[in-house]
Image 1: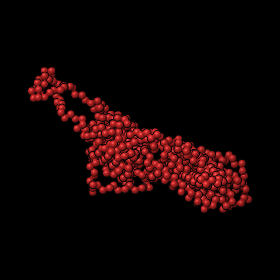
Image 2: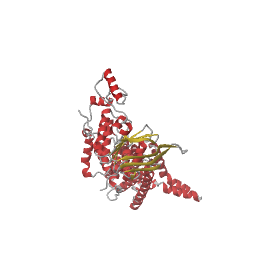
Image 3: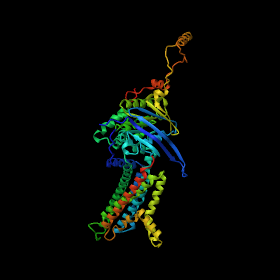
Image 4: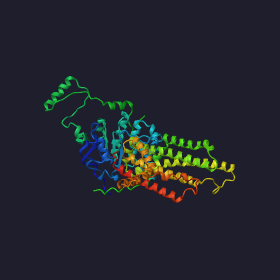
Length: 292
Length: 283
């Protein structure tokens, strides 16, 4: 058996132009983008609105054709149907067939993806339970809340057990508890060895779950690297103690100065608002289900 | 280096899945129920007009009236349902999720077509079925009132001809659905597809007039153009075999088969053109 490629997604000099008028005017949505998403990592694609994130994702999924450049998924050109065999996709603001129940919807996509009929029912139940929708599985999707839609969207993306998950704004419109649950699911996917490509405007969430990030602006790659390398300040350290008096702080300054160091600031640590909110409202369970 | 991914084969199972889902979506729409009730109501109301004729001509009247309702509402349903079911996938962005799976766009387009074709098939079956029940009911009453009437195979009307015309109308709607799907595959709005669908329906019904008129023209390029248009747009008048019901020997089975083949060829051609057009559509 062949080992999985070390790179899940490879973009080389990718450019996408859209015609915006009959006179031949074009809008460049993606501009000479070269990027590699390593297998087994959670990769964040960031950027303001109109930066080319969704266009890039659509090219990866074969929904759009690049004007120039090359896009490969596990080594297969993305314009080929074969490239999508091992990919699960959760679109931004997902709309699904409202008249189907959660179970019917996931089974539908499972059959499209070629999950054998003998295993389908068990696999559908498994992924629906995993995203914490077991109790609502037989309700029509049209009655689902925004957070439930995102979770059933995750279930349909996972039903054929793909190696690559592409999540376009998975927490858009979801409350902080739902967003934390989705983050927990993403961590769990990483623990299973999946590659996850995620776009989100919630930078704190990206920072929490991603191994690497790339920032796009006006279709161009601005920055790319490991999250720790990009946001960590390697030339600084923080010491957290119980409260010090003015005298003690002065003594500490002197002690540090004697050793060639400088105390740059003294401040009170603050809990993050989302963590405070979650501690009061409820925290996600081990598989993303909310604890009572 | 890893081995190349095995090829994703064309799958009838996926095609039927899309078709089944399209069918389910269609029958849940109010438009389908509304048009079905209208057609069924109209066919049923023919009872009101039964004093217009006597003997077998009353049955011919019922058949003509029923097929008139079938053609009118069936054409409306076909164009509206095809455009709506296609654009609901695009506008609701369900196509985004579906086409991001390992599925061929050919499977998607022909699945959509088969779903609509099945819906129109149900519509035709119910309308023609009701017509046959009504014809049978009136036939018995007429036979009891006129015991001297000459019967063919024990009946005043050939029910097989009714079924044949119903099937041919269904196939004609299939051609119309394939044309509407082709228009929808490159157009950006539901309304455009519906308007163009009705426009093409009109052309297909009237194209024989144009051929007759321009056939007299001696200028070669115009004659070629007319001939070309005659091939591009199917002649829907060929499907109007309802006039032969109850007249002479009725419908010639060979003619019906040729018309059916004519419809299937056009369905295939327009379906393939729709696939070609949709293949590079940006979702």
